[in-house]
Image (cartoon, rainbow over all chains, first blue to last red; front, side):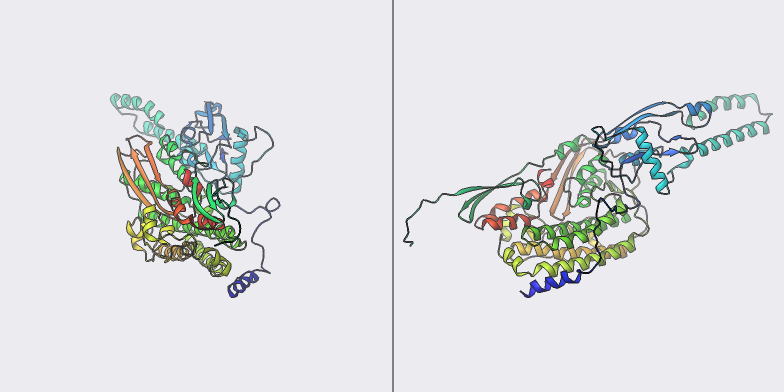
Length: 202
Length: 370
């Protein structure tokens, strides 16, 4: 009896207090900054193209095999606007299979994929769970606008940074060649041999 | 004795489950009853079998962590910890101290969250509707912290073999200090509300008694074993991570009844909260990931490692054949082993108490069936 009253006292103390629940479809609680929603593909503003090159590493590492990706030659690279020789052509994620584990983000070498904050993608269409490249890029763009997103390794992946670096290296090489015009034929030959391998490395 | 006409009495079979709210999942008990008394009980499991152990053989070590999140879906981080410790043992790497502290803080928080869920749902099983609201409110705070740290509320995929995925946010320590204060208040409130309530005591005191030797021979572990007075806790008896540096007690029950098993978990909440406080005060700086190759490819061999889950002693037996996938992952699930105690506890009790007894074991069907 006494313990029952004690319990009643505990509940009474909360009687006039503010609600701590949210009326879900009408109110949405904010998500935390690190929240992992569905993955989205990020957009490289400097070259006006996605970061993703379609290297398939996320496709292979996905525990549920929910992704497919196809790459093609990057037209922007031919014009010299981008350093990416290959670029994503189609990318599809089956959102029904995706378990939001974030492994694809961990393994990506190109800063191309991120777990967006989007978690409500229910639709009436039977094919609603198939996220194609357009939707994924939208998710990514929305995510980039929402949070202050910065690439993990900008010096390797952001087109403008890489192109400037390359141009600087090229200029330095030219300057070095100008500074030593009297170099003998043997060293010239050696540097000529090295050049293509450097090109591949960068 | 009786003067009326004599009837032949025959035992009746009573099916309970698989869709029964008190089974917390899909679990079926076939009770043989003589009037109101339970004569025999046969548990039927397997409704939630997902083939975790088989799946673990075709996925790489990094991917298996996502499976362990889902083995016991109430205490995800404790499960992750159990697997990454097995992985570290076979790879012969040690997580840096900071990573170990972070892991223990999160695992203990998850233990509190799991026990809160138990307290709330156990009260509901026994007809008390209010405590579950208080418990879920506090659990929600903990889940919010998890979301802040790991990015997910339940399926974290946060721990890695050799450390953790990413360092904790800058406001982690003040946040957890605040959280501990709130949760402790919440647990105290629930304690006041439920633990000494006459109706609750009437439903749990002296119900489902199992004595110490019987509990040991049934292979019980965790609070279900400690309720019977056996102070076996993997954190104390086979210390791992940074538990030896922490100062804590292992609460032990006396009678081995449902109330003891329930109240132990309340006490464990307080102990865990004080452990987290100690961890926060000792939290060192430093790396969060051991140096090493990114893709885990351990040498051939086999290891066994176990750790204290909220439900008991969770063991992982890992065999590697030298490839990037485990050759075999055997899980020793505490829920499954605790379920063996159901029969000796239930026989002789009333039908209505079967729910109280099953609830007090705190089984998670995802772990029972794997």
